Length: 262
Image 1 (tube, rainbow, N blue to C red):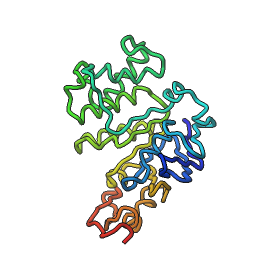
Image 2: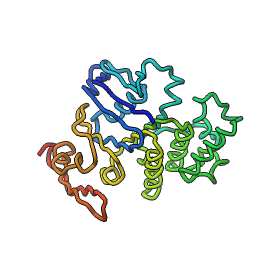
Image 3: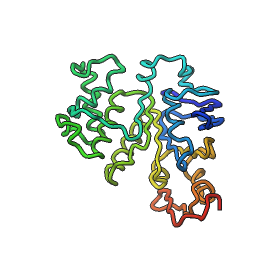
Image 4: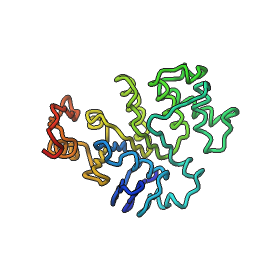
């Protein structure tokens, strides 16, 4: 159970300042959701947390170790990263794609040891694709492929799981399936961080929300303290109601404002 931290993080993309002065502590056993308008720096932050974006200033620390002092292989064993819109070009069986998640452990995907086989089977069950194992992944729908790629990340069994818009391509039922998988991983002690655009889903399921705006953390904490009607107007440019229904926090977008901040 390892804390992932960003300390005074600054990231430049060309001449643009993508992240500026980010300080975050992401706790094991918590499901943290990153939200923010387009261009806020969400994907850059997630890539930085995975060690895939080189900071101009500051550092990412896992436990007591800076990511820059870890080899790529070591990072891959402890941080599973699911990028947005990933794809598979070859007609590999679903089980073979998921087995690639065992590569960081030095396991041959074609001859997995018992531990690897169990990890793959568990990942497939988690996303509801256990009956799809022999099918070519290219024959699946877009939403099914998205779940295959999530299963590949789960098969790594890393103590940190980072997912960029993991429910974007899914129908409502499978959105809930995936979110419940992420919640279960967090409850089992994994540090789980996901980018989401659906504020209602984020409000309902996240333990913590990180609200990014123009490369900075506008607010972070429990959903009810971060997702206020005032912030939704100022940051997202929407008039919305934030209310509780059957014990769940709900964000109901009503109308766009003429300009963000009005």
